[in-house]
Length: 134
Image (cartoon, rainbow, N blue to C red; front, side, top):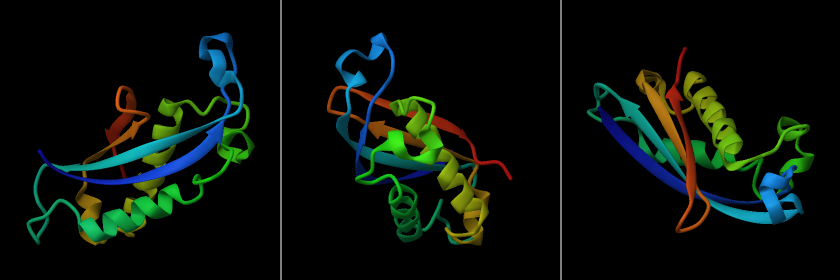
């Protein structure tokens, strides 16, 4: 399996309902370092997994609607907690849509799976990994 990983970051605000979240029940900010990993069994005709420049551009597009926003007020997260895991799945779905739409080049449609890692700090991270699908 071949892989390429690109990185960016976002700053968000949110709150999480339920005693399990302790002080995070209050509105607070988070800065995530976001790693997006693209996997494929075979390299494309250019002998690459994905064009890194297009992957970076796509990651910026996917993260832009989240950046500097209160996720509690965004439609995709209304009525559910925007935990790190939920946010990773949201970013995964958005990147998979970019790939299916050809925004990372036609050859990128050969990408088998993605892994989105949200690094909360130097001691904690969460991720979502799955098949891109057609």
